[in-house]
Length: 147
Image (cartoon, rainbow, N blue to C red; front, side, top):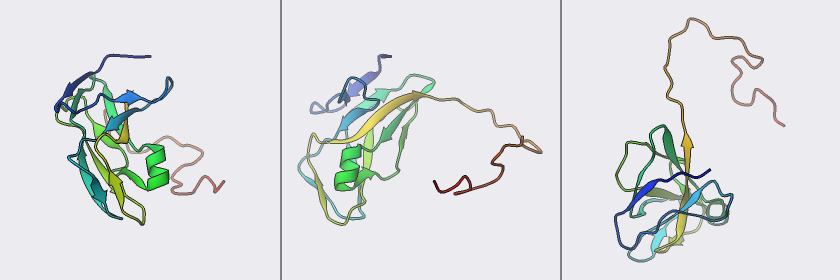
């Protein structure tokens, strides 16, 4: 399924998000830099994309790591998943964190994250004296087994 999403190019060098394959869920986001950006181990840098997007009402833009960048170079969004609300019209920026043990360099035009647009439910939170029973109950971390 495809749907139009308006994207404003805030910088003439900005690139539209692009899908890497026909069935890709996430569209790659490209970074804008004025030169190489070194990211030290444990450091987070805020990177520009030069884009503003109009996420449709009832949807959210989720900014995820690119799996290759994360597994091969240790670079992933600092907040794990960035949230772009439907009413936000500012620049999409990526807080990229170096989880590795060696410095990494990001260059202008590199693909640094991916944008997935999904529908969401706005909950109406209602106080309750009790919750319905389930097989798991109040079991927390690891309560469903280790395998």
